[in-house]
Each structure stands twice: as structure tokens, then as C-alpha cells.
Length: 231
Image (cartoon, rainbow, N blue to C red; front, side):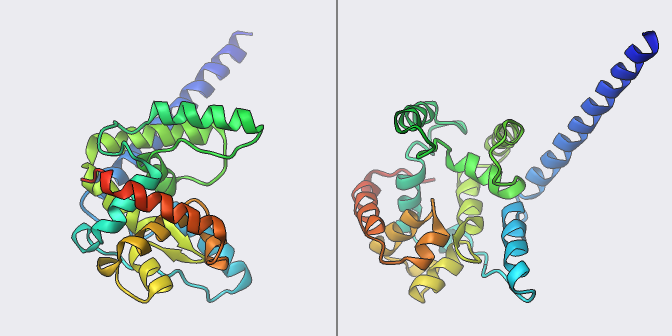
């Protein structure tokens, strides 16, 4: 029995060591990407793998643009639609999460999320789309790293450059050119609101650009944009 106890003890210690090394590895990348722009993300790699199952030569559409070259309309639209308390919270919108939970319970299925921009970025950079307890814990840890090591401006800048906006389309510059044949800097208010409305389900809206639900969301976001606070 003592031998078994020792093996359990060493096994747990080994597992703890692996977890600590993993967190330090994540922390290293978070610190590095505070000043270096991510060339790819975990979510991009997953999507590219899916595309190459059908077409081995598939490539992602993406082009990095600095914060200053992104339309203020889009910054306001994204904050208004995805995370209205972005500049004030420390990574988590507890009230929004509670409302999302109540809405899901009322509907009897998952229809709303309460993730902030920081949480979404943590998932996009490092994690898979799977909904597991381990992933949610990791998401929370990475979110805390981002909030404590990056400025709000940097979080929003990276977010706008790495999120999915269509089938193989990532980042605002690629999205602006894909949908409107213009640059991220030249996006108007209605264009920005429409792009923001696509974020929760971008590949669907890429295929169904005239979906009536998107037009309704665009109008709602346009109404909220003037009061959106951005870094």
C-alpha cells in the first residue's frame, strides 16, 4: 500500500509540474505578443486544417493592420455588439454571464454567451472551440494574463486582427476587402455595424449575406455605437 501511495504522490506531482510548465509556456507567449504581432493562432490553425482536408492548397486570407489604421466605426461597433463594458471590466462581465445563463436556461439550450472580448481573444489565440471545463479554466487563466500584461488598446488591436470573419477570412483588413473591397481604415458606420453583426457566426453570414437577421442586428448595433467607449 505504501508503494501505491508513493506512486500516486509522484504521479500527482508530475501532473502538477506539467500543468505549471504549460502555464509558463502560455505566459511566455502572452508576454511576447504584447509587442510582437501573432502570425497565426490556434483557431486559425484549426480552420486551415479543415480547409485543407477539401483543398490541400487552401490558404487563409489575413493581413495585419495596426490599431490606428482601423476605422473608429468598427472599433465602436465591435465593443457595442460584443462587450459594452470592455474598457471598464477586468476580463469578465459577471452581469453579462448571469444574463446569458438565465437566457440559456429559459430556452433550454445554448443560445447566448457571456464572453468578453478578452475571453474570446484568449480562446482564439490558444484554445480549441470545444466546450469543456478544462478549456473554460484555461480561458479564464489566459484572460487574466492578457488583462494584467496588455493594455485594453492592445487587446482590442489583436482581437480585431485575428478573429474569424468568413470562410478562411481572418482579421479586419481581410474582412473589409472580402466584403466591401476597401481597407479597414475606410469602413463606414453601417459597414462596420454589419461586420460586427457577423462575428458570432461568420461562416454562415459569409454564405448568407442577405440574411434578414443580419440586417436587424446591423440596425441595433448602429444605434448602440455612439455610446460605445473604446480605448
